[in-house]
Image (tube, rainbow, N blue to C red; front, side, top):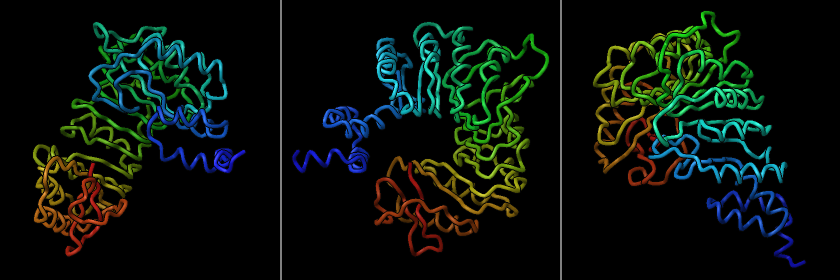
Length: 369
């Protein structure tokens, strides 16, 4: 055995090498080098499984088509049946709300933590049928599931939706929703579900938040929310106000969009003063609208107890040094410390991050997205 080949028998070294590899094709090649290297590569290859071509990530909402490939799903299931030791490696899964879910629900994913379902865009939009809903409920009930995502999903009524989470475990604590449509708000069921999933982290990506979230038949309990992401909300409409009001004593992190609130919804910023546990406020803004951040910060109630301010700025063009300096003064005037991300060497020219000038009272980094 050569010294070079012997290197690829050391698990820690193989793990370290594969951590720097982004390409799936390269990871598959690494898996052919040695059994040890295969173990390291497989851990990354099977961590995130996306069964829809053209979708870039588990939470991708921008793909033009959500159409699962039956052949891809079939091969994936065949691989797991032939090599069951790979099943515990699957930690995050994205799949369409169709017959593929029925097949996948027969596999006991012991370590699956994050599962996202999307509506198949092929043909006329239709609600998920009973067989699919039962299969989805079976997968959500897996003891390891911590986070549920629904993208462009359609349900006939609150009852059919509530059935998805009737058997969920207490580990389900995070919810990600994008354009979920419950067609009617009436149902034959009159009593609330026997138990609800207690959601602590909620991310709503929808111009019009779903009214059914607070329906008495909803399978979710939002009274213990700690982390709320509303950055895509155009305004604090009654449903989002009610969500925040119901968990005002437990919310510690909140994300809002300065572009919307500074111009159209200034009055509701006063609710920040009514959140006694709020510690971390994240504000999103487009780079060409930094004046919205300045206005947003000026409107913050003086009685807020925020300990960290995070500014996420989509640069989208050149931002001048003078603009950064003006923003720095606005942050300093708000008396809020910026939450420091990773440091960057160049305070003004980093392509990933705009950094406030060290000449200003606030010199921490502003994270760009």
